[in-house]
Image (tube, rainbow, N blue to C red; front, side):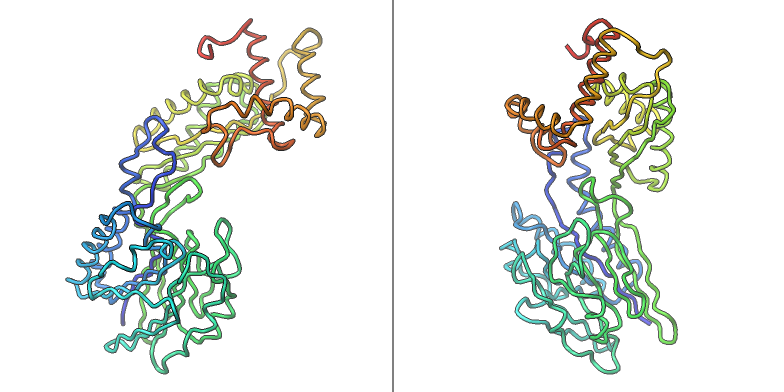
Length: 422
């Protein structure tokens, strides 16, 4: 019997992107999270007395700020060396960008596979052969798997490969191949990297994405960790996903359909947040909250978005204390049925005008052209990022129109702007 760890996409010391701009962000914890997760990986390897560790690409995240990243890695793998555990690594697309990665002298228990052609490393005592090839450049469009060597007869053969297979959502198509390409090599286990979510692509032979060991932003939600594989003669391969990440990222969807007021909206939010956070106990959670549905509280929520963000953050602290931090709040609600229908006056005229413009893509585009100069004067942080304020299409203009409608309705009903918005 033998055991090994399969990990990938560690992105050691990956830089933060704009996170420090958010008030109250646990920046220092997130900045150190890839290191803490990697330490958990090393601890797991030692505690489980694994026979070797595989890292399927993107150990680093491009060029380092300085050599401290490499020195930290060396300090951790020396712990594995002291425990007699070898580490086999291939470079992925991010590693290939960094010029310092190949110049760092690793301890002799670490082997970085060649990028010119596939090679094989053998562990004679266990009759295990590991086949792998590093990326030579950041963009590899060739099917590397086709050139991997034949399996060593009578041995347990493992393929180490950084690949998108036939495509994975959110990831560039690199070293593309099909599961059948891998099966035809005759290996027992394929340790894959590049996709950041754990996935058992195939059970026989095992074709596995271990996922990243630590989420780095809101698009990397859910449990993050590595694979612990146990091989025992006469028994099926045992593959266990082990969570080693130290911070969880989550999207919390809150449907406010049928809710009449702000307190009811906050109660529904807290219930959804507590449910989501429960799956990550005891880890801290960074959450993006998206409100949707038809609610009578729409104008109060969408009409003063900054006030609503602070109310949501306050409710999160009340529900879970410092274990949860709200990264962003998005409001995609719609007006609910009114208790008293509007049958005259400026509110009715406004509602009819907004309905007319919103139903016409042409009018939305025309409105966008009129606002283009104004939007270009907004601060850079409002015009950039994954959800910028922009007038580039009917859908985005529709969202701007809906929020403007909510603000105007709130002003008209209150007799003027909120004090907080002045």
